Image (cartoon, rainbow over all chains, first blue to last red; front, side, top):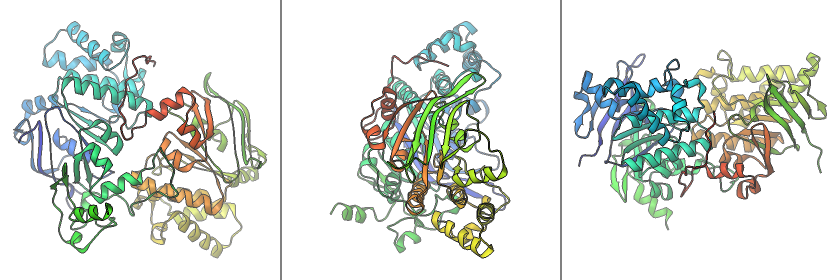
Length: 325
Length: 267
């Protein structure tokens, strides 16, 4: 089956100082048309590298194995204009809009540039279009905003401008890399609402990167949990939160304090999150897992299909049986 | 009622005419944990900075451990005394440590300044503090560049505690940490308070973290306090509309982001 995005056995290695450094290790996942998939993980898990691999914005010297297909087209075969065109069809909304919008150009210039150059629209027509989309993402006085510069807008407004620019490209797939992490919680709720609504209205697929398991679960159909450059578990979002299968997912969910109740001590995961280049043999989580067995150190567990998704842990059935006794 | 260890009364701060903090009053009891909650621009960090003495209040009074600290210290001795009353841990563990100094040296430096311990006594105290925040001997003797964010934040906490303060201000001190590391540091903070009786003034935007750390909450918006009370009461039955909005903005099971049609866009 081929979706809008198919990632197949993706392994990415960066040129390290003395030896090559793996950052992604055999990552496979796919997104269907109109589907939202969350990618959750801690630092070094490889979630941002996955996005950068998709848009082919890896640092110089990076080596990529495996392949990424967008609607069946292998991205590795694209060069020059074809690659640029493909990139334009899957815009990225980054965490910090201020770092990705030219500060000396007006919001109007930023939003209409692509329309005028690629679609050869007139300035007036492009501005009409941009103002319409700004209105849709909940920016009031759109006409006035077009004349403003990025420094005159708050972070929340600027992120909406970023979303507007993504939508102007009329994409089928939206890539969002921690789009609300730098925003206040009330602003995050509003920006997420805008993204969620517009995505559903337009039937856009989305790859949504975040460190917040509950945020991913709230707005994505499925959620993938990454650790040390690997996918540990991919499940329907609701059941992933309710009944995590992988010990890492379960530990991540309980480590986060609850807004509902205080506990005497949080259940912690010992040690710190590892990056792919530090991962031990066998299961990458075996140095921190409370349920580790000898077999976990010997062989790397493959992602296998279970319930409503896939999980990479050899002890899942055993552990589930125990926890439901 | 126990005498407050920190008392803030009618605190005001304006920056070039812009009001950052307006008429803020609260008090902290010995060994208690009070959270100041708010979003960017709420003035919560400015309040913290005025209490430690990094900003001078435009008006109002700050009293800590029975001493007024609304004005800059007049002598080195007074400055040092203030350091023994209140310490602060900042958000970013990467910029708050000297990159050329090992954690052990950093903590030792504070002990030299604030205690009369001899070399052997200081060594024992460094080991005690390391144990309190969960750092091992190796970690105490490498440079900060070899430590993770969570480990660095523990060093910052150990160093702050070395001055044996009565009050520890934690300004978004766990905000930049990964979830699994944040949980470890929150547990360290709970243990430290139980074992030392230090009081926390916890500045945060994260309500779930606040629930875990604080006994009481003040909610700030636009420089003023809009609601205050025991943590459970404020989070379970928020009365001010803004507190309710904050509460419902937090993603959780069954949460759906809702766009508020009436929202007026401002700058």
